[in-house]
Image (cartoon, rainbow, N blue to C red; front, side, top):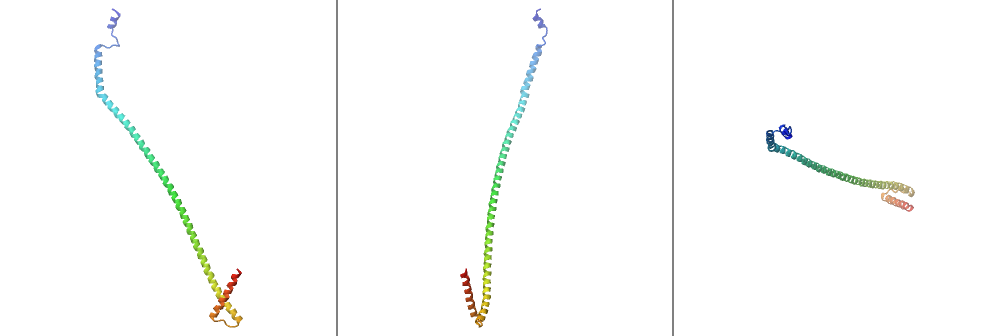
Length: 179
């Protein structure tokens, strides 16, 4: 017996017996076929769903981010417009305030001019009234004095008026000459 025969007769623990090998291969192909036909499509379907969900989620996230950025840009634009509007309103209010101040100054100036004119008119009226009263008083005194000097009564009104007017005209001429 040779070494090969001894080896052939002795069972090799690494090589299984032929019937077991055939049954194992048949069972392997049945399980492999079952996995390939039934389980693998389901696994692929679940993987595709997950992939689509992930891709859809990413697309939704990108869309949401784009929308958020658009909204943020819109808010920034609205904020800039609001600031611009506030600046415009502030400028308009300042212009209106300046116009109101100018108007009030001109109104105050006008009222001051009216008050001054009214004061001058009142002073002129008072001066005329005082001059008239003075003229009458001076006229009476002049007539009394003239009556005493002349020795006759100057009671006649027309004569009295002429004398008074002449006397006052002379006084005014002297006053103007001394100026």
